Length: 82
Image 1 (cartoon, helix red, strand yellow):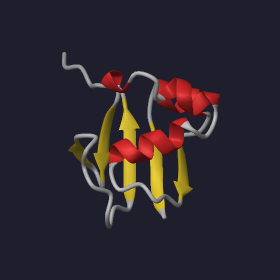
Image 2 (cartoon, helix red, strand yellow; image 1 turned 60 degrees about the vertical axis):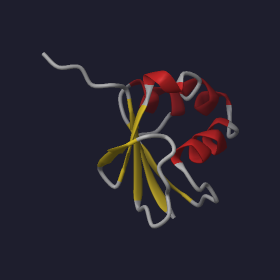
Image 3 (cartoon, helix red, strand yellow; image 1 turned 90 degrees about the horizontal axis):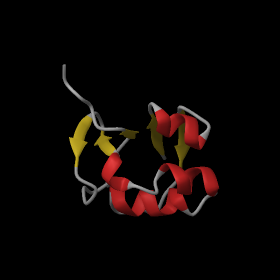
Image 4 (cartoon, helix red, strand yellow; image 1 turned 180 degrees about the vertical axis):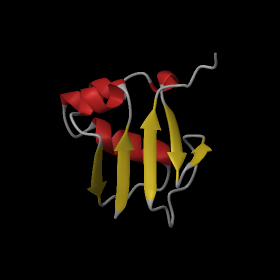
């Protein structure tokens, strides 16, 4: 089981801020594909992966990062400084 967290407009599009899922995904990219197949909200939220960042267990990662042993995956838009 992996805890998923969604922030900003991703949360609005999928309709929740967090959920726990069982997944066979080996990487973050595989997980995104599983989520996109769920329904239109997820497909819309993850339609432009260039506008999404991911963190596994609170560490910023690339989409090819492995999920083995992960407890949490967070998805959020890029952060801007100011």
